[in-house]
Image (cartoon, rainbow, N blue to C red; front, top):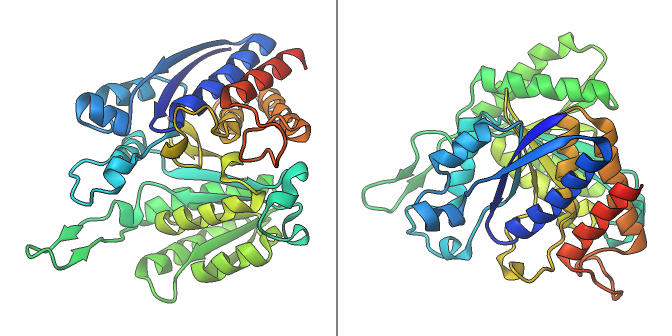
Length: 356
């Protein structure tokens, strides 16, 4: 198969972890006989520095013409610490999602047998956790209008807006995910307070009879935030709006023991983008110490969701699991043992895939 992949390294550790994913993808290409072409483009703070915009038109065109997009990270403390900044790296991320139509962020949370002890939660609470969030990505309070401040600068306002169409397309994807998994769907909202949440609940209730094999539960977001810690194994597929999903998926990520292990996919009608859930971690940039496994596992999701190549995806996941078992890991997971460099982990994974 021929594959054209756009690479958006972004900021901070993004270029380093993307470089390791490229090694792994190239190894998959050699092993399975695929022809893979990469095209790199700028985004985030790197793009602001280069052209003054966090998501340039040229980058957008590279993404549109690709079969899939591998994305690193966005963010820079120069902008985080400047509330008056007119242009921010994160604006590029929101624009990219909107313009590419990436309406569903798929974030799995699962445990690794060799790392269960590293989770801040007790083993009996988390062992066997296997859940997935579908977060609506292009609506809600991050995109609603009006937004801003009054003329005096004494009040600020953001508007949360959702349409039935936006909710329904994500909900249908959630039902379809549940049908392929354990047939259990949880709609996460705040319907006792918010009008948008009541629309979410009404829409899901209307769709539910079309999926009689799926058991549907409705939970308030604060209850889910609590139960994710108490008993994460109670969940299978969870669907929710943009802001709630942003917060809950980061909470869920620590169940595995490290945010540096969790991949994600952002899916749309045409374009599909794959990225680690961690941020740009600027303190580690350029030191060759960042954990690349979340980005590598995002590449595994790319083969599964963008190309429907399950054997290729499994080959990557198997290599990652073996690296964890053998301790071929970066300093965040080394536990007093020898810590490998980011680049060394990438080299080992690529070699393992080719010889397996």
